[in-house]
Length: 389
Image 1 (cartoon, helix red, strand yellow):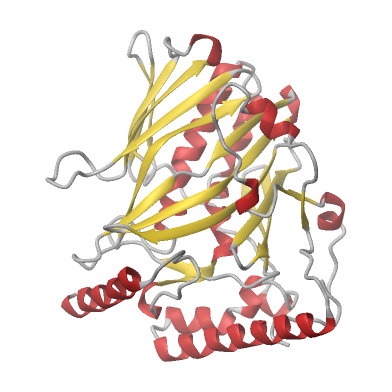
Image 2 (image 1 turned 45 degrees about the horizontal axis):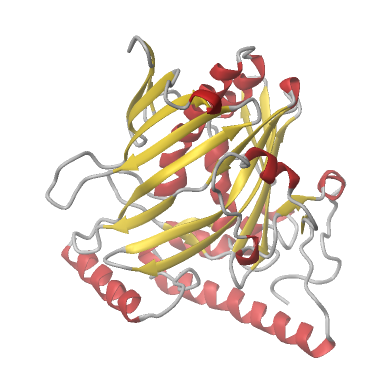
C-alpha cells in the first residue's frame, strides 16, 4: 500500500505540473481498467430491465421517477469504472480515433443493443446509441471529457443523452455530471460528483439531483445525493424525493407524506448484465476488444511492462495514420455517427425553460447516429484500412 501511495503521489506531481486539459494524459498502468473508454456507456445497461420498465408505466410522473432511479443505479459502474467503492477507481484506456464497441445487454426478455464510437481524438469525444427492439426505447448521446487539476482532478463532462420512449412519444434529456477525483495522498482514488443537474422530460416533469460527498473535516457521506421530482409548472411542490448514496442504498418517497416507495440497493439488487460481444478473434479490426486484447490481457496479469508496450504500439500506428491522411489531404470521417447541422430542435425544446448551455463548439457539434449504417454494418468496417496500419 505504501508503494502504491508513493506511485500515486508521483503521478499527482505530473498532473500538478501539466497545464491545460489532462484528458489525453496516459495514467500509469496500475491505474488502468482492462477496457477502453468506448465501453463506459455499458454502465447504463447493466440493469436493462430498469429502463425497459418505463415503457410499461402509464403515469408520466412515475416514468420520470423510474428514469431517475435508472440513472442513479448506473452511477457506481459509470464512475468507479474498473474499480469499486472499497478498492478505488480505475481509468479506462484512452480510445483511439474510430474505435468501435458493439454489445448486447440481456435480462429476461429485454435485449438492449449498444453501439459506441470514438468520433474524435483531439478533443476526445465518444458517441453512443442504444436501443431495445421489444420496447422500442432508445437512447443517443455523446460526451467529451475534460480534466484539469485544482486540489484534485476535476472531470468535466460535456454532452448529454436523449432517451426516447415511443409508446408515449416522450423524450428525456439527461446531463453528464462533473466529478472530482480524490484520494491521491491516501493511495485509494475515488470520485465525488458535485453540482445540481436536471433530467427533463417532454411531459414537463423534471428530476433535480444535487450531489454531495464527504467534507474536508469528515462530515457527510461519500457519494451522496438528494433529488426531487416535480412538474416544471409547479417546481415548489415536488411529487417525489430520493436520497442516499449512489454507491449503496437510496430511498424514494412520496414528497407530501414522506411514505417510502422503494429502497434500492445498488450493491444487492440482483446480478448485473454483462455485455454480450462477438468472440474477439471474430471481431472487426476496428472493434475495441480486438485491438486492445493484448493490453487487456496484460492488465489482468499485472504485466505492466507489456501494457506499456501494447499501448505504444497502438499510439504509434495512430500517429502514422494521421500522418498519411495529412500527406494525402484526406479528412477523417466517423463511421456510424455524424454531427447534426442547423437547429438542435430536440435539445432546444427540452431545455427551453432552463439555462442549459449546449457547448456544441467544444464537442464538434451535436452527434447523432446513422441508424441505417448501424443496422447494415458489415465487416470489414473500413475496407483495407485498419487502426494498426
